[in-house]
Length: 390
Image (tube, rainbow, N blue to C red; front, side, top):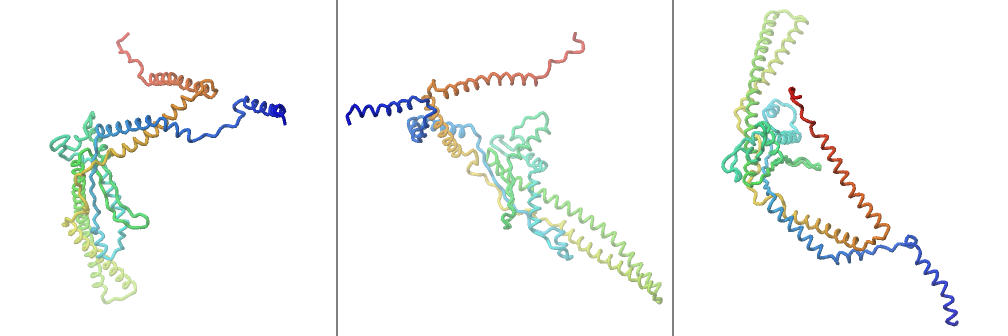
């Protein structure tokens, strides 16, 4: 085959290829995205990523150390007392029902959790005096929070809310079918290690005093009530004995079914009053014992000691988060710079993108104007003129 003939045969093929190359871009198959291109972009701008991330980490670390106030957390732990109260011991002596320890533990945990977080209990703590570096000598804990208010009740209420935010009460409960000890933990967080420990121990001392006073008050009330009931029962018992003795004396020689039934009724009434009398006597003795007892209502497992290390803010955690965020931020910036650099101003997609950017910019004045109109509506109307004004 001659070269001229071979060139003539290849000419149509070259014409078809050239026509295909001249077709619009949307008719050609899109080239697959190569991940190595993005890797190359990141490596190309590696110093931007490294230096930017390092600067962000240094700034966050310095801000955390120099400006954020450190916080120290102290903990106290106690266990509700397992000692049976007066009613439980009375039930054992008299022969009452069985005590359910699990339900009693749950009730104690709920009681102490609610008590320690109640405003009345927090008020007792915030009025106590503590020595702090911030205030110097002994001062009420309310002064530590530096609350400004128009009146003392409002200031006290805000102080109680601030103290509630600094105290956390948690309790162990039965989990996963296993029974765990209902240990209650009080965590106190302040800006001073010694103050955190002092406030935590104050919670324990106040709880002991509060429970003991409530316990003694209930014991006295119980004793007074039982004494009154016993006095009333004594009168009923004497009457039942007199009625039975009088009936027996008047009907000693007469025996009829009606008289036998009446005698049985009087005998049963006497036995009932005797049983009630014996029960009340036992309760009275137990109430007197309970009134004289002075056992603690909680078992202290751990008192608070000043923590050696701060609990927050965590400088290491802040630096780690800053490193991750900075790495993502500057990697995105590197890719965005490469995208801006390779954009073709004549491309339709680029033109559309630029038009959208302009529309977004135009929305800001509209939004600012809408906010100004909304704020002007909230402003009070013009001041009312005085009655004597024209």
